Image (cartoon, rainbow, N blue to C red; front, side):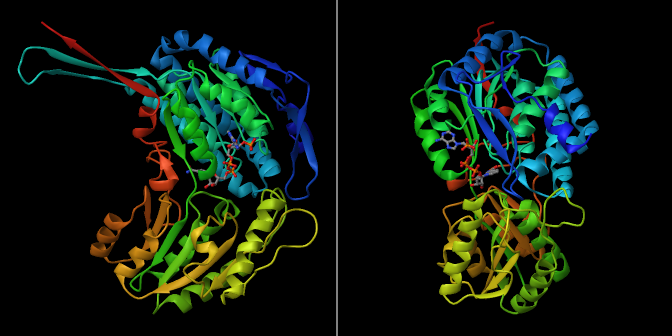
Length: 484
Ligand code: NAP
């Protein structure tokens, strides 16, 4: 299918109670191609009333959905996994067009994102409880699991498919109904996913999708509605904090997958080939726009110069361009604000005396490109060491001792991903135990895995997605005391 027909084939409306329809006041959202700034298409812009209607539909479908056999729920996920895999090229192209990343990266996301459906299709039939005898022998204790209930899901633009399937998969498996609000910059992938799920037999009202630019106004009344039982959010820490406050009124079950500031530690005993390879993945995956992106590189003083030189050589050789074009390694950033923000961080570090080894400039012309950049001698308190860069910039600093490396790594309010390169087993264990992070990659630059619990600590949020833990976020525990 060519790009024009592909975009035409995606539904552009709101999905409410199994029906696609326009927003209440007929307004639309322009979806932009970040490599040129031009408009790709328009999708519906939901009103507050549309948001309420989506929740009405999720509430109406909840009881029947919860009573649907786990195997049937699992089979819907399994067929959706197969359908996405079959249409991998279409999903990859859509993501590259609306988000900007290269086709190779988008294909990787399709595999990763679809795998959550396969994983949770298998988990749907493994929801279980417990039976035990009370310590005094007088009663029996039956523990059972039930779906939490209608759930609001808010997702970001950086992984338009996977951030959705990571939530939708376990919710379907557990028997929860949903209102999903994808990022307004990348709505097409979620709309295409909703269409696939409907084709695979997901009953009307189980998954409702609203796209809107009036985000806060539309979302807050849903969060404050007593019929909603869970909120799951992936996005920035600032918005996450606000949503947690809003959710307090209803004491909602809440999962927060927030921002990161990942340290990348290279010890003097590390295999430098692997460290450079890992650094390329940890930094450049998704153009640096990943919550798990290595944000701060700390290398031992004996290897820092060689590490920086080799990383700069690799980064400097990357080709920028439109994600769907052959031969391109790095796409544009999502918008002008993101590009200008990255430029500001680099200028700030430079003003503090840091040295730009490669890159260091926004690319003039159309689209929101920023050069892959390596910058050394970065001060500990430079803004790029404390804030999420969310772009293709690798700041490098040095350390002398293991204790200093750990202290530098933990010196942040965030706690999502971290990376350690060492060939010393004892050090690996000591450092992994000391790092205050939800996820630690050892001698590898990618840690996301549908079979593992993804999530953070501290200002990176709470709750886990994927692994055996992922479905628990969508289940309540009920205990029944039985006197025999
Ligand atoms: P964002 O601005 O927080 O937006 C994320 C989502 O929240 C979007 O759907 C957005 O809708 C919505 N939103 C914005 N303001 C809102 C409000 N007042 N009330 C309710 N919803 C609101 O974050 P982003 O820039 O899209 O994403 C980047 C951030 O996500 C980074 O910090 C990154 O680290 C984090 N992230 C975390 C993980 C993780 O698993 N921990 C994964 C990926 C990304 P609109 O698009 O309509 O504004």
